[in-house]
Length: 511
Image (tube, rainbow, N blue to C red):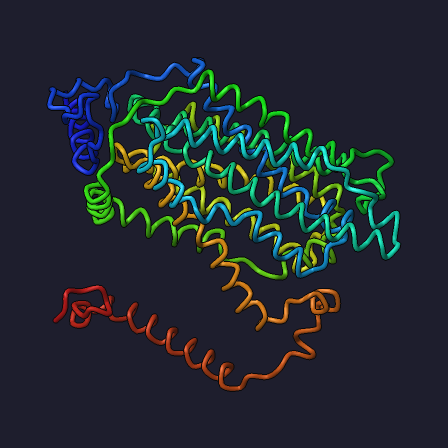
C-alpha cells in the first residue's frame, strides 16, 4: 500500500506540471475519465514491447544518428585536412558548421510540437530530415572528387581541391541540420514511449537508444580511422577507400532508414495547437522548481565536470606520454563500446538506483582515475602511452553512468504535447557548457604557460630554477599556516577545560 501511494503521488505530481493539448477528432477537448496507469507509468498506452517493430525502428534511428554524427566528425582530419588541404581558417569554420545544428535543438523541438504536418508532429519531420540527409550524402558519393593534394601538388589541383572541399563542408552542414531535425523529433517520441514504461524499468528505452548510438559511432570511427589512413589521407597504411565510397557507406543506412520510417514508425495524430496556450504552459512548466533546478544542475554539472579542461592535455599526450595516433584511434573505438555496454547495463539493472548517490560516486571515481593517470605522467613517474590511454578506459564506465542517469529525469519533467521543446531545452542546457567551458579554458590556460613549447622544454627542475619569485604570496602562505595552526591548537585546548569548552570555537553553544 505505501508503494502504491507513492506511485500515485508521483503520477499526480507529474500530471500537475504537464499540459493536455490534444483534442478529440471532433475538435472537443477530452473530458473522459483518465485510464488507470499501470505500475506507475506516466502515460497510458501500456508497457513497451522492446522487440516490437515500433521500438526497433526507433532504436535504428539512433543507430543512423550515430553513423551520421561520427561520420561527419571523422572526416575532419583525413578528408578535409589532408585530402583537400583546406586552410586553417576554413577548417576551423567547418568544425563549427558541422556541429552548429545541435545548438538549434530547442527550435526543432518547438517546430515539431507546434506545426504538425497532416496531423502528425513527429513522423513527418523524421522522414523529411532523413530524406534530405540521404540526398546530401548520395550527391557527394556520386560526384568525382579528384586526386588528393598530397599526391598531386600542382597549383591547379590544390585550388580545385580546396574549392570542392569548401563545397563539401557546406553540403555536409546541410546534412547535419537535417539529421539533427530528425533526431530531435525522435527524442520527443522517446519521451512519449518512455513515459509508458513502468516505474521499475523507466529509463531502459533511453539507455538502449544511447547504447545503440554509441555502438555505431564506434563502428564508423573504426571505419574512418583504419580505412582512411593511407598515404593520400596523410597516413602510412597501404589500403584505403575513396571519399566517394566513404559517403556511399554513410548514405546506405540513411536510405534504408527512410523506408523503415515510412512503413514501421508509429505516431499518434494530434489536434491543432493554440500558441498562446502552448507558450503559457511551457512558461508555467519552466517556473516549476523541479524544472529550473534540473536546468541549473545540467549546466553547472557539465560545466564543472567536462566543460573546463586544460590546453596542456594534447601536448602531454604527444610529448610526454608519446601516444601514437593509431593506438589512440584503437582506444577511441574501444571507448565507444565501453560506453555503449555501460548504457545497456544501466538500462537493464540500474533504472531503480538512487540517482543522486550514483552521480556523486561516479563523479568521484572518474576524477580519481583521471587524477592518478595525469599526475603520474606529469611528475614523470610513469610515462607510457598504454598507461596514459589505457587506464582512463576504466573511467568511461562512471562517465557513462553520469551521462545516462542525468538524462532519466527529462522523462519525468516533459509534458504531453511539449516533449520536443522540453527535451531540446534540457539537452541544449546540458550541451551549452561545452563551448562555454572551452572559452573559459582558453582564458585561464593561456596564463599558466602550458603551451607546446612549455611542455616540450619543461624538466623536473625547471620551475624551481627559473620560476619567478612572489614574496607577498610566500609571506601570506606562512602567515596563514601559522594562524591556522594557532587556531587549531587553541580550539583543542579550550575543549579540555570546563570554563572554556562552552565557546563556539571549542564546539560549545556559547557562554
